[in-house]
Length: 205
Image (tube, rainbow, N blue to C red; front, top):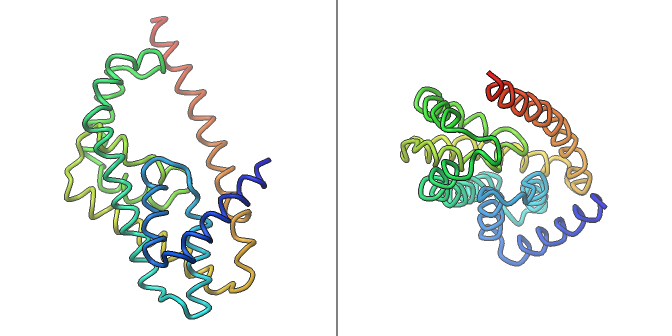
């Protein structure tokens, strides 16, 4: 089932980039960064393959990927900034999110916002959703854009470079990189279990 989904996504990604070129890279990476899990692990390696064939330039592909990430991240940021906090304050208890958690998020982004956004952009899965909590915490826009762009450029360049180097074997990249997604998923699951137990322990005290 998962393989079929990845195949369908890969077909959509290939068709979009083949038809629109750099604009397709911008569009697809914007979708991924707007909290819609469209895998950049397929988008950028295919763009790198087109670098291999001479249809694109590596620096321009990475720039397009980073620009798309910034655009999509702004959508997620403002979704968090304009609607995220009131919704979480009103309904957060039903998903185990408290006012205390929001206060922690505020302090986290005030103290470590730069490195949080930068590092998050280099991690599978996490990079797709990192902009929303930044918006809730009202991270300063200038820094948010800069660190989103820098982290996303490195990520986009790295994946495109691998696609370029592997050339005709680029189809194998999707499954390879999604192994990292599985590892991240296990880590997130363990974190979620700890998070739920902490909340129930707090209620019991």
